[in-house]
Image (tube, rainbow, N blue to C red; front, side, top):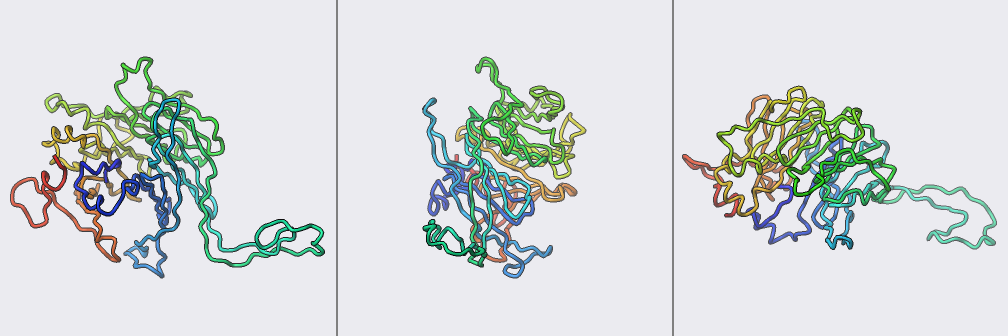
Length: 414
């Protein structure tokens, strides 16, 4: 579940046997209803899956099917080259975001390191026939042969899913884009790279407005970078961004055009007794998400996932350990660069459960009411109909149970 998924560091040998590097999924995103799931991969492709209808698939206790089938596949980005900087631009999809649905069509934004694209996904099950000036193949007729007029009609045809590019937002970022977030006004969105955050209008591609710029006059003075950014789910003037120093800044665009000065800053005081060489690295926030209610923030650093109350800046109100057993392995993780892996986090629809990724195809879920967590494994056998995800336990000492996963052997290669 690591966002960048560098397979040499993680025990995913079966991936190398069956999947090429371009097929590795780099981002996933449900639409607002949960009926469509878009995945982006390192090859620049976007694959959209659609939830099966109740008449076809097995349903859960809520009466909803849990089976998804391929709905559409398209090439979103191609490899490019920046001739001014002599840099290759990968086609890997960094983020996908769905726009709120306004009509029968769906719209989504996808981005690689530099270019953001707006796509329209629509269905067509009828075709027009009986044109006066065109033949059945769409070619213009000889006007002299047209002796009568007819009314074109729509005839049923096989369902076709059309995906068309509607906008291309380029040249807005010097550094790699790490976040895009659609505003609640439905007209604008933000995009963030390591040092800047821009706001775009969905209908304008040739300019954006810079609202955060933390680039120092001298790059040698650079002490932190932007790691993630997101708009508030209800208030279109508010957004939040996180940094590699572990701070989260809440900004209000009503205060000034350039939001370099935050309205609130959320950070946890560091215990001097626990400080080490790795403290700043593992405190870097890799993802930040507003709760659906807009009251809380969810953040993920290397070892923990935290919940923050917007009304309390001095520290998180909840902290959950994701893989605390790796704290004793930080030296090895630093040597093989695993300590720089990034993970995402997400709320459930009622903000009562949170989920985040871990190593070895594991992901962790935490019940906020009880504080209890569970480790689940996304394994190949679970793709079968009615398959149940199996829970796993990481062995860290004491009596070892059958099926336990060892830290050294099974999770991270030294």
